[in-house]
Image (cartoon, rainbow, N blue to C red; front, side):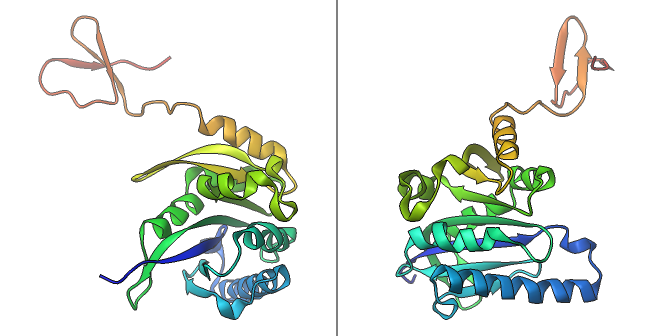
Length: 225
């Protein structure tokens, strides 16, 4: 097995991409790459120094360890979130270790950044915000960079959220540029315990079982009130 390499990861996902016609998708992808190249270059990172992996409706950008995290979380993110020219976008930022197997980027930290950008929290925030994008930053990057205010980064722009996606259960930090109230509301909701799903069943005597599979016995569905 090859040794892992440290890197920073920025993922962008275009909102409602599947609703676009084919010509609209092509135009949106062209706009997406122009926006990314401008954001990185203007923010102080040479686009050519990064690797990227196309995801159809989004892009994974892998910045080498030589690129300062303070630059990505400061000037680069500021530039990207100033204006999203193709509608709406979800962004996530994380850092860690990765492999490249000749086909793509692999590793737990790569998985993590995709869990963040595709999380229910990220999607609900984008659906609710009056702005054009939402940003999720991993807890690792928040604790190491954001909270210290490097490069004029404003920690108060972020709200801690709880992420539970597939095998990933972690904290992250949500920012909704231009619309801080949405970040606050989504953060509160993310910390609330989820209501159990399924049907509430009344089994015999006084037993009520919710969201469970029961074998044997007489089961009579009871409506929730």
